[in-house]
Every structure is written in C-alpha cells, then in structure tokens.
Length: 71
Image (tube, rainbow, N blue to C red):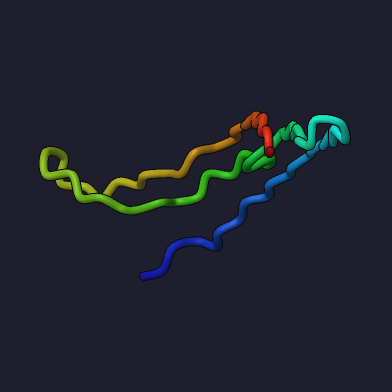
C-alpha cells in the first residue's frame, strides 16, 4: 500500500529594514503554508474500538507571521 501523492504549496513574503546608524536590521515575514488547503495524509492509525483504519491528516491552510531583529 502507498499513500496518495503529497501536494502542498507554500508562499512567503518578506520585507527587511536596515538601519545604518544603529547597525541592526528588522525583518517582517508572512508565510502562508498549504495555500491550496489540500488534506495530505500524515499517518494511518488502527482504531481498536471500531476495528477500522483511520487517516490522520496534516494541518491545512496555515498563515504564520514573523518579526526578527538582528544586531
């Protein structure tokens, strides 16, 4: 047995501000994971109560924000 094909499309946007006087930079990111919201199978688990094999799916659409300071 083999899982179905895995597909996940991620998009990341970023902006960087450099400070010449204070010698540090700031970065802002928006990382959008699984833009298509495809349900990819993570693992199959056996359920003893129902006597069935159930699918466990990975996280769907997930936006992530990041702010970073570098000295």
